[in-house]
Length: 239
Length: 401
Image (cartoon, rainbow over all chains, first blue to last red; front, top):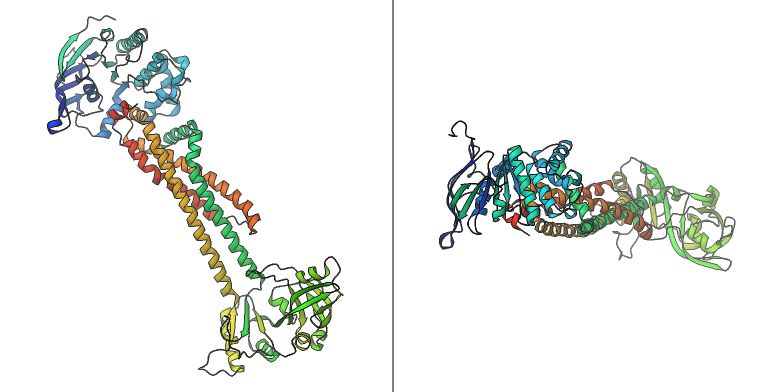
């Protein structure tokens, strides 16, 4: 790490990251050389048309996928070349995910859903429940812990999903179109929540979205186009 | 972690009770079939063993003629009383020796008649056959010596001739012989060959020889070997003695046969056990089919829950952990199936034991085997679906609708 004193240390450094699907004639480059630095405590919105490579980039940042070439340095560790189970451990201990479709386990209660990542961290049942309750309180769903996802509105479900993502106190929260399935009022609620998590708890957030209304909540907007970073601008801070 | 996985499995099964039940039905039926077959088989084996024991323990039957099969040559030299005396005198380790001669006769009392087997013997017969009197008395020495007209009836003959009337003291005709009933035998039931052992009328041997058969022959000599003594040795001794008495030269074969009831017992229990094994094996095939049923449903379940698996993988579940989750689900399912099957099988064999008239013998071994086997079915048939789940690509799985 060569970050100058006073600046927050870099959490993420992508250097020359490419991703090529298929081989030979059928090869298709989703990423064509991405350089990106994200500091701890940042809130980055990733935008771009579909096929621009923003989802592929998010998958690589989330250690769900590996770059074909280039390096991905996370917390000073080269994670782009890790094996499947090693990447799973990175996700388990450092990352939180929020998906467009919430991805809650449908037959379990909100509390149990939030507990899930702690199960894989090996916490005791008592500890899990205490932490999950705290996370649900943070997202404002303290009274809803025993409800199943089908008994919650879309916005509430996404809050449960956010609680699940932050219950492990991750270094990085990755959100893939978190407001994509919500109307704009609910979407703004979710963005307010993410903003406060970033501001009050210092959680680094990377969010993919195609809605400019939502992107304005971020501190910084990275625009993707044809597998390259087209622009990278600080936001005025509309929130 | 494992306990968590089992909890998840239990919850998953609970959420889908109807399907879980249908999934394990194959295992339930398979295990129940195995348990029922083997339990009934054990009962049948126990019954055969018990029936043979009721024939008389350590029983040797000496019969004239070569071999034991049919088609014996006409030149059968029957035994005489002197042969019986010689065995009694010269062979050690015997508890009883009884001469036996039989002939089918018509037994008549009042208006009732019944064809039965008149058996000339002495009081030793009861000892050899492990039999006892229900009422009345044995033959007296005087009756045996004089050849008096007295008889002891088996339960079937008593039932047919006397019905509810008092039999002891009654006069019955056995063929041409009119004789007095002095005793009644305890009911013994069917032999393992399906013969009615109670269809018998005992006469003093001399009475039988003079007044029924009209000769001095003895058809069989039944010998009971003392407990703890070797029946094989006694068998050899009797063979040596009789060869000598019947003047058989070293180059000739025996013209008589000494049969050990133990051989028959072993043969019969062997047959029953082979049959039990076969039926059990057929039932085990249905257990296999049950396992395929579990695999089928688990594969469907993995497909259905692809997104859930993707979520778990994204959250940081290791391949191994997803594998264990689905494997434990399969094992828990099949264990439930095994437990239900064991209960059902035991209930069914309890009910069927009454219907087919074999004793219910609880066989702990097969219950344990069935339990372990059903767990093994879960592991074996759950492995493929679990591996498929564990190997899913998280990105693909998350995208799955």
